[in-house]
Length: 388
Image (cartoon, rainbow, N blue to C red; front, side):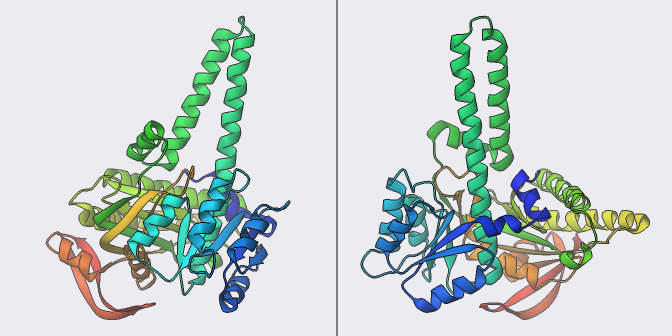
């Protein structure tokens, strides 16, 4: 299920006006672009690392920092290192801005405590999604910290009241179980176990994994006139159904982004079946949506349709940043899967040529030829029609 923060995002985006983002870049053109793209947020600007550290430690610190890596004097890595060493600023999430897509750069940034990376030139939709995700994650972490403080208080009360010992012990166990269940709701079991045992999760490179993107078509226009409760109930019905499909097909749900849905196969445990698992999941999601369409038609509700895109390749996966309770994946494979979705058609599963080569013996596919892909070269694409 989606978090309270995600549900609130569906209902009302006014919360964004309350958030402050610190933009750190020595290039005026980049600052102008970011200011234009992030008008929904309050913004502060620093053109060097020293000014960024000063603003981060101010009386009104930012809720998020967008930090350029390549700057004269103090570079972004050095700024991030100092931010994470300072108790006053260590919890502020940092998204690195870079034109360098080298994996070593990405891994080095995450080891310093970065929450995410954003590649130049900026894609407006991707930038907004990543910014909103980090702000929501920070709120979720703060709620978890409140729960921990409450648990510590409960533990102190147990020592003070012998008569209440057994009752409070049971309550504490319930709270711990709730916290563990919450952890399992946002992290794969294997990753949650590593986090509890080691206190951190090591980012891993997966040479072969498959990413699936699904997006509701014309969601904004179709949802007009619906109450917030009706819209959330509709999305919940769809996404819970998708969750069940992923579970039986050995896929891992990564996150929901508004009316979008992202999943991956072959992570966090590697396997050789992830291309087939992902395509089978996509077909089942389309069939599930047909059932919803028939039901909504009879009930006079909006009839949703969906585009699904799939691509196979290598990626990096791990828990974002330090103490950020979310499992995510990064790399060109993720971006390409997103492009497969946007280049698809409603009600169809669109796969890349690479994925096709891995699943063609299992599924019937219709070639689409080489098509233009945003910010990429032409790519072979195929529509999957059915399993053989």
